[in-house]
Image 1 (cartoon, rainbow, N blue to C red):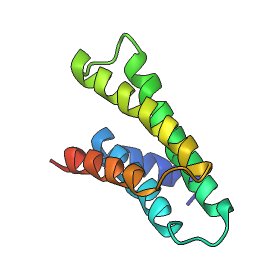
Image 2: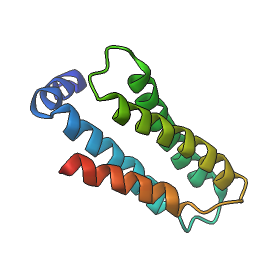
Image 3: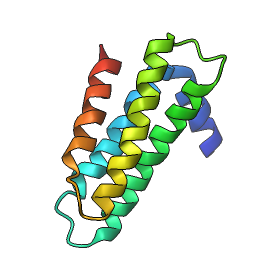
Image 4: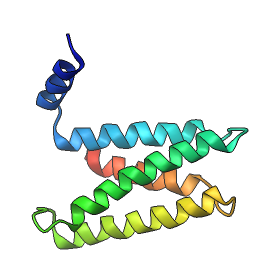
Length: 113
């Protein structure tokens, strides 16, 4: 069975909400695994992945055809901007990784409700 067949099967059995939850779980796991990393490389990689996820959410919420309520969209965009700013601080050694993990877990709780 080809990779495409697996992707098609996954897309037909997983709702968008479940996909978002799965992505947040994978990214958050990567952040958790690199908390005690001895080098910056795994931390930078996990933070970059997390920032890409949040940037995608920000871009989606900025689209006019997004069906989420305006208040929810604004909140997600605001969180995305905070994630980007805090991520830069973490990479410079000026902030902890835990707040990024906490925000992701909060989003996951909302998605699982």
